[in-house]
Amino acid sequence: LRLFPAVAITGPRQCGKSMRPSSSASASLRWRQEFLKSLVERDLPMLGTRVSRVAMERFLSMCSHLQSQILNADKLGSSLDLSGPAVPARLEFLQEALFVRILPAWNGKLKKRLVKAPKLYIRDTGLVHAMLGIASPNELLAHPAFGSRWEALCVETLVATMPGARIVLPEFRRRRTRRGP
Image (tube, rainbow, N blue to C red):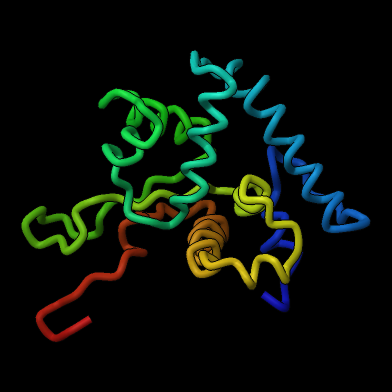
């Protein structure tokens, strides 16, 4: 993190535009929050979502709090008063919009999987920090979920470093064997 503090706070490229270093952490936070606002108000509806702005903001906020955690769609839906198929439909839309990544459980044999549920990642860590109001590296280091934010950044960095390779994402997951972890 000390080598790349700007990447951990502002995230990598956003929609093909590289982030120019802002004059301050608060200016960077404002820029990312405005970007999120335009994404929810303009870009996502242009891609075909029929969800209201407020509902999508709430959904993205909940997803940002679940960053790098095992996805429980029923729990997420009940916390937002959504019906059963609404959560998977929204997650699928956001995945097709390249906003989230769903990392499936690792083992191909269903009975041998330790974790049978996928993990949820918002692909741009800078936007996650903006949704959580984290403006500076010190705030990030003091945040209780720093590890999960770091995990998401590592997964996206690994995927980005091999753009031409066929990456099978479940291989990034850790699994336990008879000999131990």
